[in-house]
Length: 117
Image 1 (cartoon, one colour):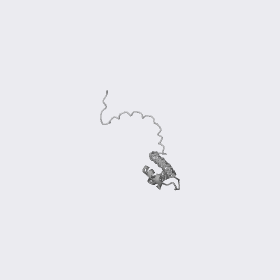
Image 2 (cartoon, rainbow, N blue to C red):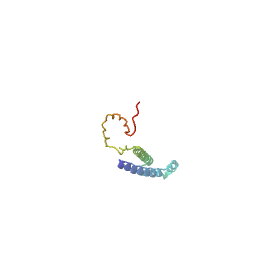
Image 3 (cartoon, rainbow, N blue to C red):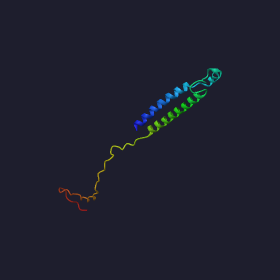
Image 4 (cartoon, rainbow, N blue to C red):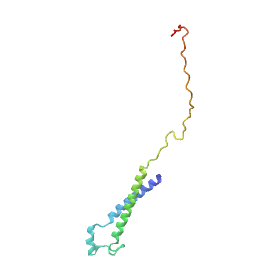
């Protein structure tokens, strides 16, 4: 189970770095006016508006991976392993019940005379 937790942590760190990088790569809303006058990316790899859609969708995918990894790590961290205890596997000794002992009569001291009742 420890390997799953390690895998989730690695995926979480990679997705967090990817989200940071993709957010920094995206253009702000103020860049649309400059793109209208010819400085846009109409001849780029993704087309006129393809890069914005591609980057935003990729950011959403990596954010989803980040949240799923976070939930998985939390679930694994809160899952308590039940310790069997020190005495697990031992059997209590069986004690046979005994009959109560007969009452013992008081012993008379031979040096003292007996007192009649």
